[in-house]
Image (cartoon, rainbow, N blue to C red; front, top):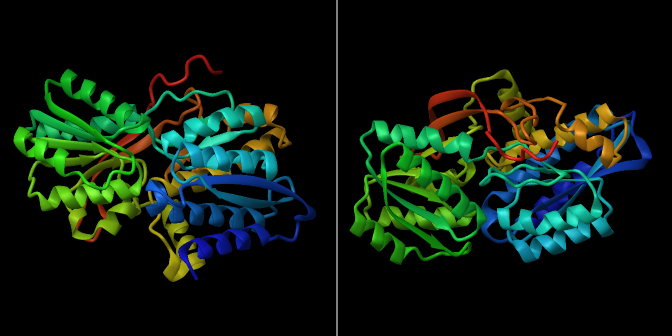
Length: 385
């Protein structure tokens, strides 16, 4: 069976699970647009698995308001055109009650006008460049104000003065690196080059030649999803570049797929598998039990997805209905206790997060170096209540 067939089979299995208190003829449907193809295809399987587990657990305990929860997964192809098709199908054909989505910024931006027309709750679960504001949307993942400082501050302490920035040429890549450049310069460093390639770029030769010529103390990258991270890192290592390497977009699962090329990358995030808490250990055990040999490494992109399904459940239960006008304000008021700790999306529709600075080891796992408690996302959407 193909990877996509396995994924869809798992989704249907999750949707059909029922607990004894569930109404057989009534359901709540959550739409999951995700990049099963394109740049995000490396990480998408883990995101779907996390969604499946959340739904299985929820249904086993009576569903939401006594109703069975089902998933509808649609491939957004990791980009704008695919997202438009996926959102249109989910909202207007499948009639989903909410969208919970780990996507590229290009896909998110393309989907938002369709969410506006459909008037349904939308939880965005991917780390991103910040300041995407919409009356139907909440975000439970990190923004630059939470993620950039741990890496740059550490590099500065290690003696880095000059930086070269590499990104994908779209909202996330440019937004993240614009913030990073400003932060570096305020801290007294110098950006000696910044270069961008298309989202689906596979050949980084020309950019890496410029890196070698500039000979920076540190490199910071911000690319789209999994696949560009893999190709850029492999080619950077093959080029023999020895600068400190910080990656603003790699997740733990993608790092494992890189093999030894990932060793030594510095990353900052709100989730790593070795977070030593009972909640995280229970989550990992449940994932292992459900998926066994098919398990994809839980990561910074899949865990917020898992928690967001629970956030939607909590908001519906607080509102007593799936009616969007009542669920949306409730999303800012409910707390989710998950693998990352307590998550509340109450800061201008974003969430304060505990952040970690880590370094990737040879086996793709992450050694946590520092912890930063309850980092505020800063000014994101001040005009939205």
